[in-house]
Length: 234
Image (cartoon, rainbow, N blue to C red; front, side):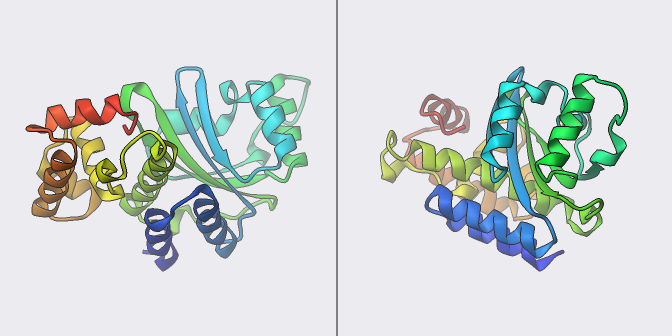
């Protein structure tokens, strides 16, 4: 596995604010020849994003509702594995919205990239993209699939933790690992299945779930899940 990927996971889980998260993602992106990063979560037609793209592009993308036609988003929803993409494969003729999207993306330095998609709860999709202005910077073959998913989940829940710090007592804040285990429990995974998915032992998964239950005074995992959802953590 790329050692930088392991370092990125550690840095995300240790981050205390959005600045630290952005710094970790930028460092990883630059170490592999990418200029920008973008985390995107879609649920129906709604999107949430955390990225380092130019503000002018963010305005165009959100204002034009480009997530509905973005080939990267479409592909991420269709497949559940790391993939490389390039704007050179998108339409280059005519005056369609997709052609305009391509031209504007390239003008803003977004020409190729690698995307890690993860299926979320309630039909949502989470994806982390690293993009470059160059024609081809493909590191998809270098990324361990399970660790790449762990990066996305660590980012997702760390952003939730930061957003919830003003509303939830610090004593009840779940650690990134605890939140990851709770997330898989929501999706119906038992301790053994969760252990296999995130690369830790079954006993460690149970330990994280037990700690989470204690923090929320929950007697069962289903009760823990309900309480965590009620507080906006999952």
